[in-house]
Image 1 (cartoon, rainbow, N blue to C red):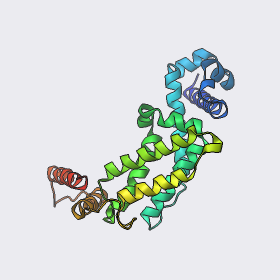
Image 2: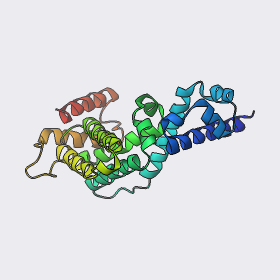
Image 3: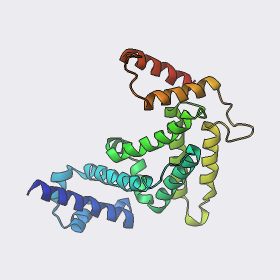
Image 4: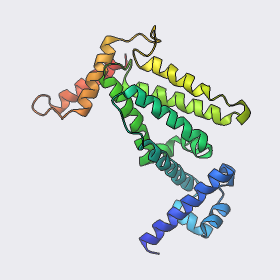
Length: 238
């Protein structure tokens, strides 16, 4: 089998497993069912993926690639907070329209972290929050805001997925989204849910300016820049 043939077979198996996952749920993704759906023998599956864990890792990566396709269609505007809202809503929509994928993706942190598309999806959230930080409106460090936003969004989606259709309250997503924004973005509530710390917000803005600017050659040494970034991260997260 040529490398191209091997790649085609791998892709066919992953797509077959993904189809079973979406149509029938995780329990349907068995060695026998996937092999039959892909038109291969079970030994081929084990040769390519090692075991079922390896196959599910590949399906997780495929799910993030599908998720990323949607994220990349969202053009950024000059309003980073509005972009953050739209990103949240798209995340929730993906989870509710492809629940089996979502549960697999966000219940498999190891595979998500190993997937380039999974890391890219995380980077999109971080970039959105970095743009807010650059305006001086983020009330905490970008890293902490990203963790808080991600954890809340995933919790909301998993809660909605678990609820029977008749009892699913979609307003929960909007409530959680606005609660997150009131917490991490200054000026989105009156009175603010979290008082903006001027030192923290300005440190976050400067940290993002450093992150996106040139390397400052001739101004700071590498060691000096690293130390400054460490101090700014600490101040932004205080």
